[in-house]
Length: 159
Image 1 (cartoon, rainbow, N blue to C red):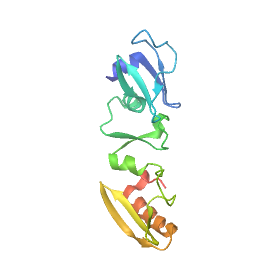
Image 2 (image 1 turned 180 degrees about the vertical axis):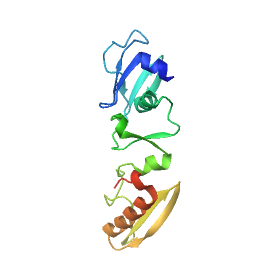
Image 3 (image 1 turned 135 degrees about the vertical axis):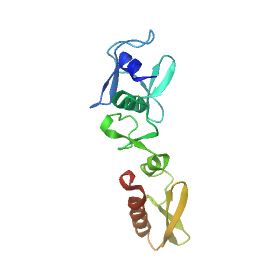
Image 4 (image 1 turned 90 degrees about the horizontal axis):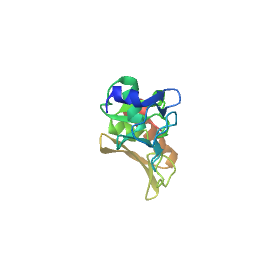
């Protein structure tokens, strides 16, 4: 896939993040309709010449004229929001730092884990787990995580 072919087949609206068909690459797409289908994980995928592409990666190619050299992060964590203002280049670690709280969380707070009768704080950075200490309350453990996350992950921190 290259920019020229992409722009021949699809229009992209950077304000809405939607692609629409300009020209059909097969008999199925109807010109003027919104391109893509929703993947079970929430990402929009577009089939071009029998190959599936993630819409966020196509948006990057459409706007910047080249494939993203790394992962693409959705700032708002909505994988269907492909507005160019919502997309940014990220390493795998940065992308993971911008994730929602895990469903398996026992405290309901990022970085705070029950440890015997106390609360443990930890953070992952560059694939390594960093222990931040043991605290009396889950809120104290979470506060330690928040401080470390802002320091280590910067604008990719999601609390």
